[in-house]
Length: 582
Image 1 (tube, helix red, strand yellow):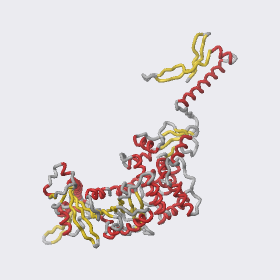
Image 2: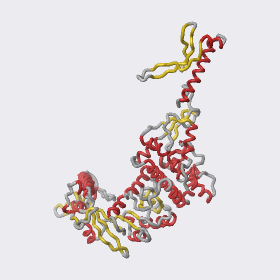
Image 3: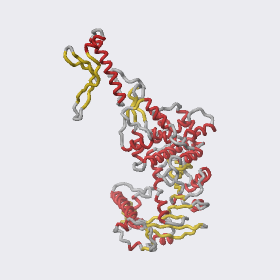
């Protein structure tokens, strides 16, 4: 706004004018307020024109501020001559506020208070544990790197880096208690689906060469020549992690199940569920363990490892049924070019007696799955042919999908003697061996009833594999940089809690976004501090996903300007429970 004096020589008026933009986009001005007659006002200032105009401009400034306050606008003043203070941070991470709200709903603060009552320490365990989780999701790094990242949060750490390492020992010791409490409290965010429990194992490597403690040489799933540890993870029927434990890298994975499941049965009050896992963890002993009481199991079964006679029965194309039908079908009569046939699933049930257990082997056949396997193998054969014609020595890798498995080596005989040169060619026999399994899949179970439901249970196993992928890829859980066994366990507990938070956040906002989209968005949510007097402005892109996050958690950080007092209110809100929890 500005001052204008208008009128004839002896009849002038003093106005406050306001600039505005018309509908056609052109700028214009209008009278906002009349201050009075020029001559009358001049008399009040003793004829001093400069004092009159200074007063008028001051009135215009007051009206401008009042107008901006009324319309939600703020005037921010900057100086071209003033430099920003030395070592003052101006950029802050706010994506963690959504995670902080979830930690509040999980009552992690109360869990940490209970832990503190059992130990003697002065540092803030809740602050350390939650900060480690925020850093694992938003900027995965070593513990030093995590501590440095947390300096960019709106509420930076008040604890020291040595406190972090001290806390890791306590976190490891209380791991089982923390997991149990998180499970109970998570029911108030998303009621847990206890009907089916999925179990799987993976391993994590260390950037070291020598074994020690639980870091042992074992069969690495990534074929790395480094010491590893094994993680066993339970997941519920909604894909939310339930419990985990860490085992030495050289321990047989099949022996990891019973100790962890026994803890769940005892500490989580679980007694009735269907256990689902892959063939590598579905030994007869583990199946028997899950056949007691009200427990049952659905385990994938390797057709390739079956006895020849049993495999012949399983792959026999007769005596199959289509899901939902009782009529027997011979697979050789199917017209797989028919879309309905192509998308259908066929099955047969074969009674099996394993020791004292009565089981059922369910063999399924899917033309669509067959086409998928053929497509993948075709690409691998193409790669194998390229390897054959490429120069250099050729070695078969340990990966079961290595295209070199389709390459055979033979020696060339010249004049009755074996030449030193080796000849490589496609192994047609190996290709035919794999083709016989195309489209087939099998599970073994002690359940009776709807075969379609049993198959559906097994199909969801992909989610536990995705949980491992998120921890390894998005949260960079490996390589592991800590060395002591207790700190290793604490590291994986922070990874586990991070995964739990992510899955609960996913349930709050829906499944229309991928893990990468959600995590990348949280990481991008930065705020810039204008100066200590005014507040923060968002320096991230507002998207449908950021809108969804704000709506789900009932606060917003996407206003053009957020005052420091408003930001304090948002932080406070994420630390307050919305509803009553245990």
